[in-house]
Amino acid sequence: VVARMYINGTQVVASSVGTTSLPSTLIKNVAIGGTATQSSTATYGEANKAINGDTNGTWANNSSNSLSKTNVENSPWWQVDLGVSTQPIIDAIKIYNRADCCKNELRDFYVMIADTPFSQSDTSLNAALVNAKWSYRYTGSVTDQLSIVVPPNVTGRYVRIQKSGDNQSLTLAEVEILQTPIVVIGRNYTGVIDDLRVYRRALSSGEITQLMAMGWSNSTLTPRVDGFDWSQ
Image (cartoon, rainbow, N blue to C red):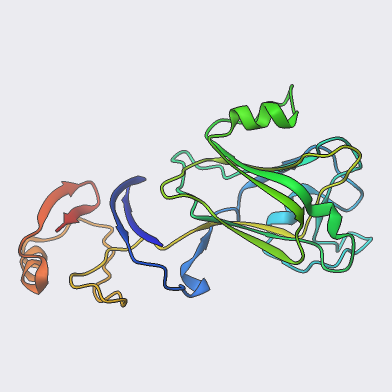
């Protein structure tokens, strides 16, 4: 797990904090608020239902359904545009399958991350893989949910899930694009964050003196628009 600090969209600190599990409340799902599209849409299976925050995996054959679903086709795909001008670091991707039946509707697929949009004229799997900066192949059916840990410092605006077979549909209960906490870690880290401070304004000289006295005496400070970059 890597903790990071960003100022005005620019990463200024990145520190490894080990592999200790983090409370879910500290993990940000950057898919919420994105724009989802897919290769085709089955009745009641609109693409945005896979990023509505509802992980219920039971298909409802009416407008209350909360799963996305394509028609039967070759290499069906679903994707989300995270809609951010500064591409976020993606730490993990969590995919939920439908729970009631039909597990093969999320089977044998690729997960891809890209900086630029996937082609709308050539929607083949090969074209998507060429456009992707990072990809992950999963074989078999997802029983319930799948968590994929993305390598460190992979950024991207577009995330696509695309199946590799013909005459198939793609169904998703939910897709979460996860980012670990953006924090500053205090000195003598022992598994507990002991000094977490977020500033959205410039610090006064008195505040700087106080913080330096609290353990940042060997720090270097770089003034920025809305605060300071601290490094030790």
